[in-house]
Amino acid sequence: MPLMLLALDNTLLDREAAFRAWGAKFLAEIDAPGTDLEWLVSIDADGLTSRWDLADAIKARYRLRASSVDLVDELDLGLVEHTRLDPLVACALRIADDAGWMPVVVSNGPAYRQESIIRRTGLDHYVADWVISEAAGVSKPNPRIFTLAAERVRMHMRGAWIVGDSPEADIGAAAAMGLPSVWLHRGRQWMESRFEPTTSAGSLIQGLSAVLAGGRMVRP
Image (cartoon, rainbow, N blue to C red; front, side):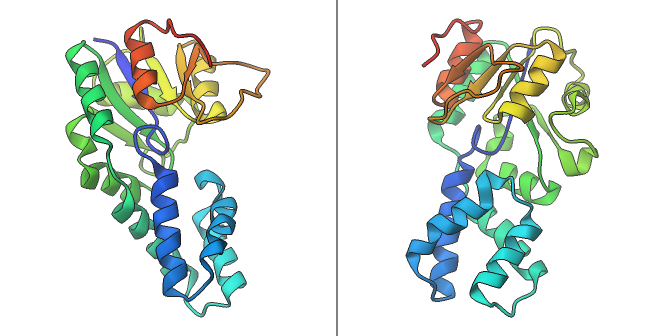
């Protein structure tokens, strides 16, 4: 039973959609223009911006009196509230499990928020376990976090695949460990010259199909 090591944000779950939903609601609550949503999305940078830096940027732009702590809490709770598990993704994970694969989540981010999202969406019913960087004390692309994921489910890395949307954190880690990988391109072009994914896919369902087929998928 080989491992399938899966990213969480914008791989198993649509973080971008959740952030946009939270952002639209937040802007309405502070009477800011709805057109500012694109500014919020750009500042967030797909979750790569520190939550604290994002909170400070929001405070400065709208001259809010709320503390950064309160804004970070609101963002975390908003992402938990607005994240949804696509039923088709759940079905694909069940098929992968039935085919003999063991799906395990490997995610960077705050432990409480990420675990809350996993449980609230019901994703915990479709994966064997998860490892979150804040709790693990190590972040992707460090191979150690993937090794910890294997240890959590008492599995070895032989035959494992890594699936994710981040060129550096997911595909770079796979390359460093000599593992095959699927990059979820989300409409982007591959720009990295140091390494490349085994295959790429436009959605998680396509990515899981590639893994089940041994990576035999034509790149877009």
